[in-house]
Amino acid sequence: PAFRWSNGITEKEKTLAIIKPDGLYGNYTENIKKAILDSGFTILKEMTIQLDDDAAMGFYAEHSSKGFFSSLVKYMTSGPVLIMVLEKENAVADWRTLIGPTDASTAKITHPHSIRAMCGMTLEKNCVHGSDSFQSAEREIAFFFDEKSSDRVVIGHDEL
Ligand code: UDP
Image (cartoon, rainbow, N blue to C red; front, side):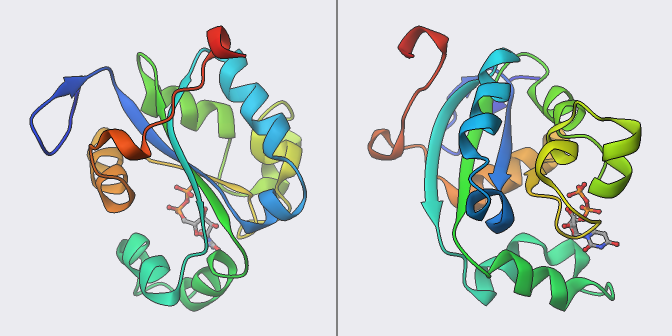
């Protein structure tokens, strides 16, 4: 469906992608961006930030009661992350397909061409995030980005 910003402007479907600390640290950014662009996404916005505990806990609030929560927060704050808004028809589902299953060690066997197979290691250290539904995408994009021109970058094949 069309994406609705907080100021009411509607645009093509969007999703939130994050290259997690292991992805940045392992120098996978270029390969991940190539896969994104080759799959027809436009990178609409991007920023590299260091999450603190509050930000990581807020972002993953739905998992706060899970046994893996504190380890997940430690992982997500272990170094900078690259956060991107991706735009495309069917962006949410297509980005989930491209990243592959949550457990990167499974992905290496069942989805060898997925991004998590390429750069992830384990169930936790799976190198990338993707919103799991349109509703999650709206919440997660609003968590990190305002609709204001100053933080907008547009990267697509035309610009490369
Ligand atoms: N995760 C974990 N242990 C688990 C499940 C998830 O460490 O048993 C981590 C993993 O990094 C995952 C994140 O928590 O990407 C969020 O989990 P979710 O189930 O939402 O998976 P995703 O939507 O990222 O595939």
